[in-house]
Image 1: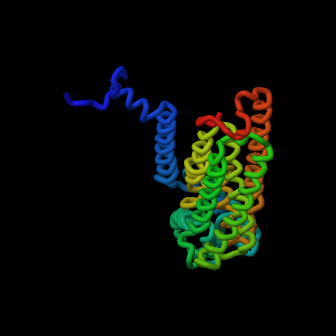
Image 2: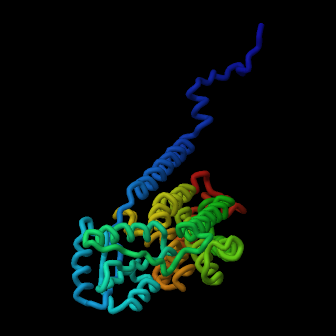
Length: 365
């Protein structure tokens, strides 16, 4: 008589029982969460990039004849769809200064004695933005039987195609930040049990951030010659950005356990990258994306990186404060979660076994 693998007296398992053992409820929930992130990724990138449209691009207008400049201001401010946000300035020098200080993205210098005007742009702020500005202003000038000559006063570096190197550098820094934090946390429980251990993890994250910031700045600058500007300043930006994203990830893990990694990816990748102003700077993005972009780490990092690389740091102050706020808030929440968990463990010592202060359940609780 043939023998079977079924043990005598043991009930035979059905297919559904095998499925339940192979894929737990927790695993199924996490997989559904991954699917949601994947669909969010697709939706966010296509939603942000599929139909770029200029909106309220800051533009300086100047002319030796102030009446002509005022007429141009009136005309350009009333273009359908509000693609421009024009303002008059005293002269060409003032217009150039505003571009270099990142107060405007371009300047129209009108020649009252001829039919050709000059449009000053800054390619280092993003090639797509310069092209969009030239298209809008060129069409408006053509309707007045005039033409424009585009002059790039802040051209992108030879190795920085379309001004995207800053964005890719920031993306790399962000990836390192949340991956480092995830590894530090899940290596011994997603929720640190003690404040001291949280401090150690934040210290390890800081050391990683310093290293990652320096190496990223060296690769983008001297090694690949993609970005000009101060390597020291880029190093500082990279350190702050990596630490901010890492601290954010640690904080979310402290609040939600392993699910916090997914929440960090949601904020930094799904929402942050499309709204960062990389491929399409803020004035070309849909309203939702250009609104949230400056407040998220990738957007703040991209704007600051371009400011350092091409504008001598002008305009980088605000984004750096945004990153500092994320870093401080993430660190504070991480420490608060650790202290709160320690207090709960002391109140319920049976929940944490002796000699195993950082042992947590698979869900991180």
